[in-house]
Image (tube, rainbow, N blue to C red; front, side, top):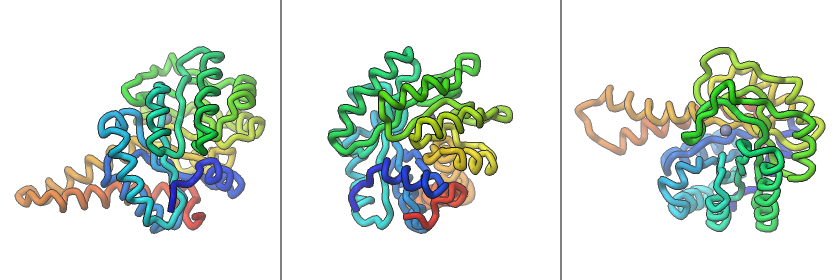
Length: 284
Ligand SMILES: [Zn+2]
């Protein structure tokens, strides 16, 4: 199956009242775990790459792994570049074969963000590549970019409406009070703002900072218009803990493939739990 258009997946999710999980891959093993979990549950899925991961492996290695995995897959899969501030890297990924990209110009002024996001949409859409854009500042650490709580600001609904009208993103990431990384306290989600932005823009919303949110929070956000839920930090933990736990339990074995298989199982189990929670199982 070729890569699927993310807008098509998210529009169907929004209509159906569920969300598509967007999971950050780190290597071939984790990409395979994401796809197998989605296939087991017959769920559409989004594989995400951070800009850091693309730079680490190179875009050609990543696209070859994903193409190989997707070729024999039976569920809709999009390959999405997560938070990217660098238009050159976005261009590289589009040319390499990513089916979706995120332009994160949220640290710039509103007008600069709007213009740069618009430019990326104009570049991507003729190639059938979808675009996610961000407004407001999501607290936490993403790709070595630290946003302190006092610097975070929520997306303004009026600005969000104008932004979506002029940029026409396929998916919109307004800051609504979630955070990247691990939550230190109870997150304060601005549900009223989410509801207003989702209903007035009509654009499927991406929920960032999914790791650590309570099940009811996910369900409420999805009901209010979040059609894409990003999970990264939880998978980083599963990726490392799955590996370490196996080795600690078999510390004289030194059989790398068994350790890699244990890591695969840990990552896959995490993804299965999330897909069930987001309601996308059986929607492929
Ligand atoms: Zn994010």
